[in-house]
Length: 313
Image (cartoon, rainbow, N blue to C red):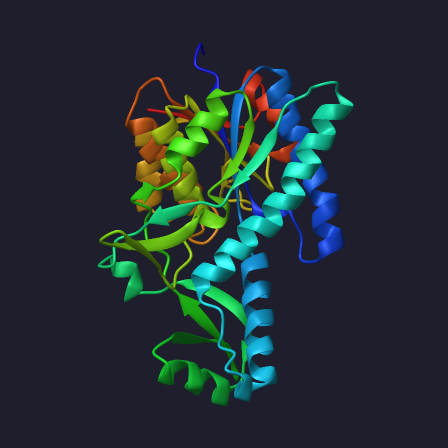
């Protein structure tokens, strides 16, 4: 492809649940990104923020409980999302910078705290699906519901808060992302799906939500005019019926064929479905686009067409 603009979406396996694990795991992601830079791709990176955003929210909630008389309040989800973008971006950009320098490549790596517009009337706000935070007791769950929040019984006697996952409509910092990318920098943006905001005149109000990062990756790739949307996850190829006699892995598949499979409900709703759906939406808008799903370790091979799953219109 002549167009070598690529958006790379890193799954949660690129990070970890502790500070030490994340610092170690981002080195693998950095190697994958550096491979792309070496091959002269114009790279924009986006990433998951689970479980980091839940950890941040839980920590901020506990902090607010320490001394209620001080007037401390729980941090809004939008603030927790911004914190996760900064925290993950900091580790990721340093790891990518180091990997590039070790290869003799001198290139700036920048993280942009990204706000993503959502529709206040998106039905996701009345049908929340994203589980977040630490387990709650019945009393804590009741208190959350009194505040107007949604909770679900995660397992018998254990509750967790659930929040909305609306679709992204627009990316407010897209011009800055495009400018830095066109200047040859590696850009990290839209982390965790970006900070969901609702536009109220000139004011952007943070929404209590988490945008599915795969859809924000699609929106980024579309608005930047990228030819390739690359999902890096925990498996080498998109596979259905795993562990059964009907197991099948895809080398190349069309959006039309995937749509038929989606209707049959073969893709797990939380993990695989968003990647497949985002890929279909991306390639259907332009026959010159492709989406690729593969593992962190197989980036070069997937782009060469020797492994991974390639999705076209």
